[in-house]
Amino acid sequence: MKKLFPLQHVMGYVFSLILSAVALLAVFGDLSYTWGLVILLVCAMVQMGVQLFLFMHISENRSRGTLYVNIAYAMFVALVTIFGTLFAMIWGYNLP
Image 1 (cartoon, rainbow, N blue to C red):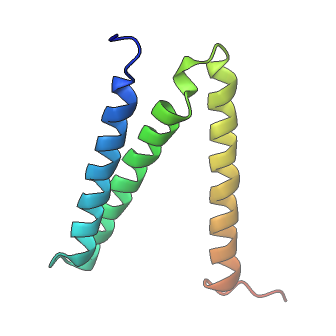
Image 2: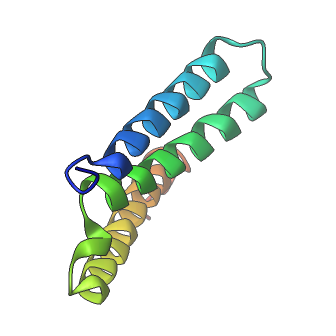
């Protein structure tokens, strides 16, 4: 019976709820902007890891290396897109 109960998934779900509650408290709490943003970013990164490894079964696959390379490439593309957009729209890139 112990094999049939998905304890890791239930614990991941509970941990995601706790992280969401912490993020909600950071938004509605009396924190400075900097600390609120730091708490939100940390909660988001940890929750991303929980979702990725527990619910998407990344660590249960035989081709883990390929999956990690794909994730790293996707993060690289996302960061280039975000910072390229910021560079073009906010930081004032002007063509001559």
